[in-house]
Amino acid sequence: MNRFFLSFALCLAVACGRLPDCTDIIPQPVKVAMKSGFYKVDSTAFAASPEDYITVIVDSLSAIKEEGYEIRISPSGIVVRASEERGVFYAVQTLSQMVCAQGIPCADIEDSPRFPYRGIHIDVSRHFFPKEEIFRIIHEMARYKFNCLHLHLTDNGGWRLQLGRYPELTSKGAFRTQADWRKWWDNKDRKYLDEGTAGAYGGYYTKDDIREILSCAEKNHIAVIPEIEFPAHSDAVFVSHPELCCAGRPYVDGEFCAGNPAVYEFYFNVLDEVMELFPSEYIHIGADEARKNSWKVCPACNALMEREGIADYEDLQCYMIEKVEAYLASKGRKLAGWDEVTRNNLEKGALVYSYRGQNYTSESANKGQNVVFTPGAALYFDWYQDTPDTQPVAMIGYSPLRKVYEMEPLAVDPLVALRNEEFILGKKLDGGVDFIKPESASNLVGVQGCAWSEFINDSQHLEYMIFPRALAISELGWTRPDLKDWASFRRRVNVHVRNLHRRGINAYPLSDRIDITSVANGDGTSTVTLDHEKENLCIRYTVDGTEPADCSPVYNGPFRVAGDAEVRAAVFTGDRMTGPLASARVSADSSLCEYYPYVEPEHWKEK
Image 1 (cartoon, rainbow, N blue to C red):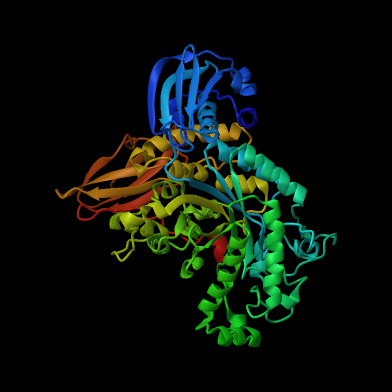
Image 2 (cartoon, rainbow, N blue to C red):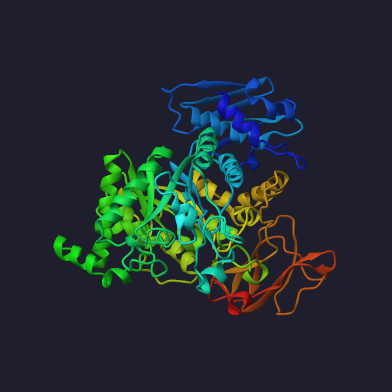
């Protein structure tokens, strides 16, 4: 048991300030029964050696679910029960959120995860992050009960994994002329530099670096899934291997040549080294966003299509994916890919990462494919998390904390599927969204948040974009939907943001933004809600279109308004308005919903 206690000790931070209790836990457990009293323990001593204070009972024949646990805390001691070591590990993470200067509050807790896959994706290609930052992210993932790290190692931003057979992939493809993505990619510089060139930007992981990452992840019960892009997003390969693209020279396109047998030999050799290094059940091959333009004019690709009876270029990509999947299967591994692979007749056990919206998630699940729910327009960390004009440059989209929290991965109801897609598109829809058939529900295996790094250029910014939205995704993946509650989560996440800061994590400090919604009551009135992220705010409002002042009513909860009204609201500190002014027109005839539409900021208009 020492290894999971060691990990716990490394990431445990003693809380201070308000006394914590079980209601502060993220993700929300299945069942919590608070009791009076504390198990008295010195918090520093507990952090150093938790195994000295916990009685652990592991019974593989017990009815406790995989990764689940039970905790009994009394003044005389702590007993943890689980059917496997992972359950004990997650019990310890829960205890780490409860410990305080007085000890650990007494309670009975029963808990188990909703989904078996709970992931965070980090793109280390567009911007490179040192292994030490990956360690920090892994420890926070463990605290919030994530169990999969999807490491995006190759893309057009640079090749980040050193290989013995092809060292030139990193010596020529891991460094580029500029760090700034907009200058390098959007302005079409897009040139790579040899390792050691003065002023070159980039980096890569050696095999020893990867082994350290894997060791850290294993201690925290996190599987690391490598992504090696194929057949597209491979510009960095062609600097050293131009013969593998259709044009035969670099800087033309990013797709491998489907009709060149040397492509498959090269990629299989790469996979061999990757599989030798990574023990993961799944190998992610990307398989997304192939433009296919080069294939259309390539004699070798078209000859292959004629020879194999391939009808079109979409099927040509399917042919390539099928070959890779068969190779992985021959090595005892399974294919993972973005939702373009749904077009393939995948082997049982393959994993589809659905990023393009609810319809693709539903299609994959209803075809019998295992699906991870990761819609880009909702669960991507590189999108703006607050009013775009107030934030650093980010990817074009808007996903504040509540939008992330309100997504429902398992949309087995048409209305739930519709709501998901409305959040994804940022507007009201009239229907026409596919849902997951109840008999296919078990094919939705989990949820993932993705940190694409085009506009995340250092470790501090990475943490700023991931946290605290990752905590909302933690609850999507672990907590049953009937136990989720935004008001409860908002209170808890305010506590956790402070604790993240104490641990040195540069989490976004939450917003002073106010979102105005209303519900038409059918009696000539509407009920107005002023939603917010921070707790204990003084919000003042008006309903006549005037700007709130220090004498305006204080918001204490939803209120009724007769007829049509222009509601305005803002955060006040004393007699001063200190937050942004929110304004919305509400009507007694129709409800006003928040779909979180994206409003382009000035810094993108000036591009």
